[in-house]
Amino acid sequence: MATHLLPRTRIPTQVHASSEEAVRHLARQVESLIRRKNGEGQYAVLGLPTGSTPVGLYRELIRLHREEGLDFSRVITFNLDEYYPISPVDPHSYNRWMHETFFDHVNIPKENIHIPKGDTPSGSVEDYCLRYEREIQKAGGIDLQILGIGRTGHIAFNEPGSSRHSRTRRVTLDPVTRRDAASGFFGQENVPSMALTMGVGSILEARQVVLLAFGEHKASIVRKAVEEPITEAITASFLQEHQGAIFLIDQAAASQLTALRRPWACGPVEWAPQLIRRAVIDLALSTGKGLLKLGDEDFREHDLHSLVREHGPASSICQRVFDHLNATLCQKPAGDTQKSVIVFSPHPDDDVISMGGTIIRLADQGHKVYIAYMTSGNIAVFDHDAWRFADFVGEFNRLFSIDPTKTAEVASRVDQFLKSKSPGQSDSDDVLKIKGLIRTTEARAGALACGVPPENLEFMDLRFYRTGTIAKAPIHPQDIQDIATLLEKVKPSQIYVAGELSDPHGTHRMCAEAIYSAVRKVSGSGTEFETWLYRGAWEEWAPHEIEKAVPLSPEVVERKKNAIFRHQSQKDKAMFPGGIDAREFWQRAEDRNKSTANTFDQLGLPEYYALEGFVLWRDGR
Figure 1 (cartoon, rainbow, N blue to C red):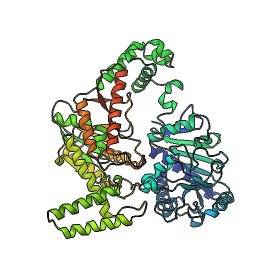
Figure 2: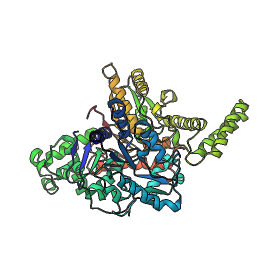
Figure 3: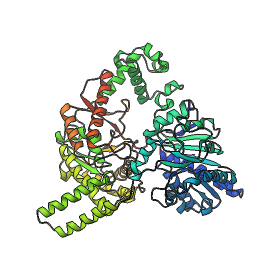
């Protein structure tokens, strides 16, 4: 997909094939600004964000500094915000994060770095914020302000209701913002309730503004910010007033924009097969008619004149779409003869949550199913579970007279650490090992409930995940080699990969990229297989995207739910206060599978209790 500006947006919006491509584009823009200013003997003034979105940008700028000699000595920076109150050296402070992620790796003079001071005495905050504004003015204003966007539509910490004329100040954080930050603080209760932030007015005074947004979980708010009228409820919408503002987004974040969701409404289109399916399915669902009940008049009344004119009549178009969807229904997902299949699961429960029904079908049909758990998933386990399991092992060993001295030593270390652990503190090695073991044993139980024996499980514990925090390291070359080695050993006919782009932690995306690299590595070496992408943990495939739909009976759905429940420690602390537990994942998974089946039924296709959908991965598409 070529980079281009989208039509029908109130802010120039440039969609890129991937987040990596988008950040490389922006990094070159930053580089050009710095080199131009250096050549003129002037300072380049940058406004900088934090969070997961700009990490790739900072890594690329570091690379440009190290490998291409980009000189940051005449750069002045102003960060957007900081939690309050918080010490600059606190592991969760933006000050520390910025230094560890970026400033420690380039040659920006210390005195040129400005980050709001989260430890400013409460009585001095107002004066401090005024001084921060004056420092920006003293630097000549910000040349390029880089932003992310929160799920509430906030830029910096300008929550809903912030004025267009607001300046640097102390604010109270929205509950959604605190919830989204909860994983980094190991619990929402540890997230500060306030922050210091540049105001909307401060941001709009920058000469250029670039907002980055990646992933499907940002798609809804991106659409509201760039296609709907300006409102204080979505502070990013104020960028519509800025002549030098632009959104750089990936395809996932662009998915709800009119130009991608209903491009035929924006002007002439090339009617490729998938776009035809999207348009016809959208038409059927919006009119409440089955595919084979649509007529020419329905097409003409919904901006689809050209589709009928170029590919009609309507009856022929609808029959082709019906036949395609009908052909996706697949009772035998790996065929008739016995084959080997690998299911790659980013966390130790994504397999059963997202495609547990298909795993059951594959195992029941005699295929040799392997499940490769790519990370330990240990950061998703609560402390009380770690303590409970440590206590259980101690009592178990005491009961059976198994090395009580050594057991007591470990249990004592765990107990002492957890009792003294401060809010948001990273776990000790002992606790991380216990939490990882909890996820491992739950994964074995969940897989067995699907008919996959323990000897067919691979616990890969990829290196990029081993940070003990939500923030992850880059994919390690050995991670890719480990996956390639597994592929060469098993020689599967099919592999299944999480194609989820909404994962708030980015683990799914990183695992997928590592697998794709490994697939390319073994390609042509005699290890040939199909690569199928599943979803379901956060989003589901849209009907027009599905290329294989596996029907699930009520009995199979019940077995899938039981497999999910084996993951009793699983809590998603990032997205939901208090976490989502296995019982709630039951319902979410069942609802999504039933919804997909219901959509097929509405379109006039055979009625099933539930469906799991898959898309075939094609390299480079």
